[in-house]
Image 1 (tube, one colour):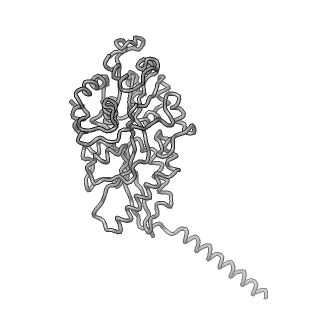
Image 2: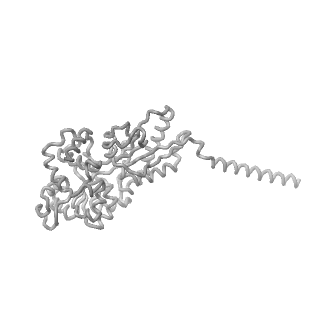
Length: 373
């Protein structure tokens, strides 16, 4: 009997070891059982840091499992400006990303490639004004006038602060915005001025009148050096060279990400234009035709899964940490950058009604040609 009992114990131990071993093998089966599918993604610089976090979390999640496929999103370390894509024929049929996150849906319409938007918007960032506090006080007559295009234009026309009637402010009226025929940020500044001047939320081929050209010229002449400004006005204003700039127009996200450095150098005031121009960050795909119907379906399902991931609450909640606005919710006091920004005029929920909705590609070419002259 004793031998029988010992045999039962040994048998139980062997069975237990077998179950444990089988479980271990099952848990450690290589991912190679699933077919890998890589989707390459290129984004605008304003969304790069957020997207790096989001891509990492997606690639670590079960959402990447699509049937018998395992999807990997590969983020291009090199960012690209929207205008570089649609103005310079950057991509070819043989060399292009699968996915693209530009700063604005206008760029998708302008691209001229087989590109279509799959998620209309995953984040937002409006253009904002920023000025040194003394300048904001001067151009708004101590807050009695709006800080917007007309008050900025009047200062630019005066050329110097002494001529404007503000002798306590030294030097010229210096304005900064990115080069319009080199960056999408700069083109959007022109669109903002046109929308304001014409009192319209759409821009058409007849929007640029001689009256507008005369009105805008002093503003353009007030920009000291477009080359030194680059594509990030906030970064420029933090530098020693940029401290001579009195007024800037730039995406809110760029301002927020440099806000601490900027306010450590000088007192500033932020304002939102009456006619908002909003960067809406759509997710777009390069449409392929040289794959089988099955592979095309899997690819679409993978892109849809990633698009849904970008809109999920956890990913949207990370936007404000990077100075961007979520789609469905406004930033709150819990979001440090926006909380800091409220001290200088950033709003948790600015009115974005009356935003620019249309600007045709043909007109963009006309506008940029005029500006470069």
